[in-house]
Length: 315
Image 1 (tube, rainbow, N blue to C red):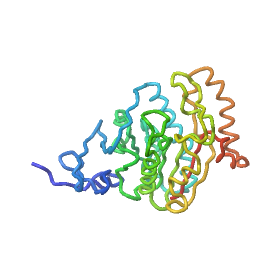
Image 2: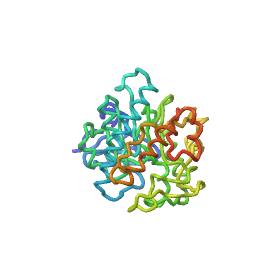
Image 3: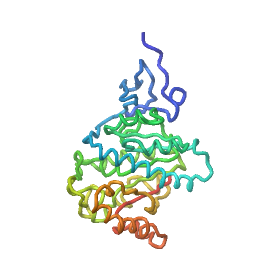
Image 4: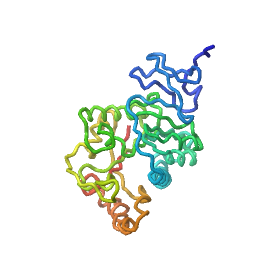
């Protein structure tokens, strides 16, 4: 016997109301332990106890314990040392439990867990193969398999959204740096979805290597070697401040965009695993945590002298 459908919104599932990632974005209903769209009739099940709401492609990269360990450490460091201080600065004395946060491309989900442990109402989505980690988290029901281009949440659901180096990987061939035909339209979809699910007056933080900087320290030229990637500042893979401003429609849908200091963002866990990395950390830490973070050098952060962009966008 089929059970009566229930709306999968706040009255059924704590947190943001869930909608179908189809174009109609109809509220999902719970039928026989599946979520069903009353408009397109798609049905969604669970993977490792988390709802699988992916529309479109999945990103199933190689399983690598070393990479996952680095994600775990980096995500937790980012939340505790950069995001939480930023939230306190931007939202003042507001009760953390009243702030709803979404991490797009959360990976193993350690950033989301750290935010939840600090009292925030944090959620994470990813289109990769990390859901087995989410089931072990303190709030496993706050993780969803979903595509950034088709977010399964009601409009205006979040006060704060964080997206770390996701947009450059949208519209490229597999796990490469080659943009495919139609890549700009795909990125516009993801940017539009970020705007849609962020409430008016809310904030977004987007990060990635800077297209204007010819040295990409974060995508290796050879995966087996710890060597940076050199590229043309006109390539289509990475984005600049102006590229992000255009995608996020700053001036119409968003009110402002600000390039933030880098101090505290990186924990340098990956480079700490080998001798050359530990040696190179010394000048790199100075460059990131000091030179690119001083107020007097703030104007440099929008230029090719800054290898990593941290952008605060006001909705």
